[in-house]
Length: 552
Image 1 (spheres, rainbow, N blue to C red):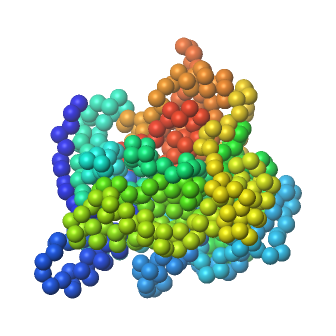
Image 2 (image 1 turned 60 degrees about the horizontal axis):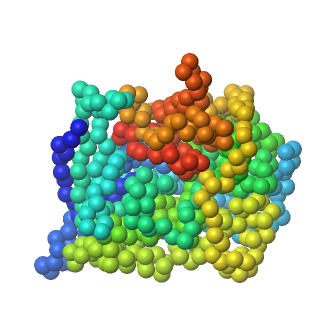
Image 3 (image 1 turned 30 degrees about the vertical axis):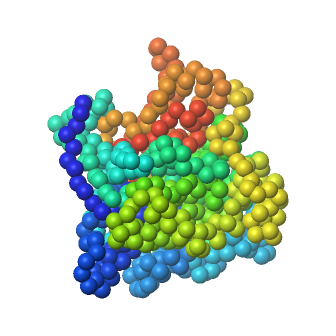
């Protein structure tokens, strides 16, 4: 079927309305406004109306999930009076580092520097992004929700826009009565701000060979938001945990953030380079909640929201080249995240602003070539993004062989400005770490329904919704591998690493099959990352589908 697509043209097309994409749009609109006010005639005409932002969620913020502790310095540059109107839940009032054993906890007498958060804010990223989205729309930018970027438009040596997803196709790809082909959106500059493992970014990096010396590596964060009994946690209290129940041969730790109105954000982060293909991050998170320290906070409370998201953890040596002809990559898509501190919001905002400044100069001259847009890389290197990431450039790689080795290496890195014993420290993709031992299926975690939950209960609390009769957005390129080779070699790890019960091995009359419950997908992208054969592609579903991380 060859669709007749409506074509629209813009100066700038930004794919993704997260902190990076919205900061890029808002800063560029502000630069254009100042330019117009001071212009004396001549030059290339610029207008905020020629900036388009695409958001695949049903509303701005719906797919935004984070811890979230925010360093406010980038936001202060973008919106100098942000404290007057920004939805900042509470400033950090106390920070602690805790070591868990199964039955007890130990608070470090001195909080290590990476865990110090005085001056930062505990926030809801969902609410912050909604607020930023409102500012972007007021600036005159066109912001389109429920539209995802399905394909890149390649032109010359770079890109010239995107094609959005077709709407109204049934599960077999046939048009329904409400069929509408996707739009062909062309732009002088296309900015990919899709978050971790963006589907278009993945295509572009592979096609144009933009990889750095290390592949991108990831962690998965599994999170819940709770209403708890009064007095159980103070607003602004921040704790990070190491130890139980994460095995010592793995990287992982938890967070506990106190918000206003007796609400608490909790989560567990696990590095996706573990060796046991039956390890279950969701189960580990549920077990973590049974620790006496957590149980004392949560008991008698109520689960409000659930979510899961991958985190780009590779740092400086995993950053792809962020520019091509007609295109830039920003935010988490470009690996702008401090994996040691788990801080990425301020870097996402700053990267968006630096991209806006680069694009502004390119538009004024009419030159959007890679040579002109490469200024973005230099701006990043001259900013605090480079300074912060350079200090932790070997951090996550240090933990690929276990906790003790990681702590040893990070101690050396701390005193050597990030260098450590080896610089650069090389790393393999996470999926290459699985052991082929043969793994009979094991019983799945059920939970008690009060403190701990099974995946389907949690997925219900994510607000996830997809149109059932649409093409599956989780493309498995060879199901025979799943049914035969993967079963024997790894025991089908997709049924364990997916935090949303999407992948379900079933025995049918004609043999073993992998059932894909795509409607459960919370858009974490773990399957695209952690599949041992790299035969799963996550692509955008029909716009508006996915989780609704309200208040998270």
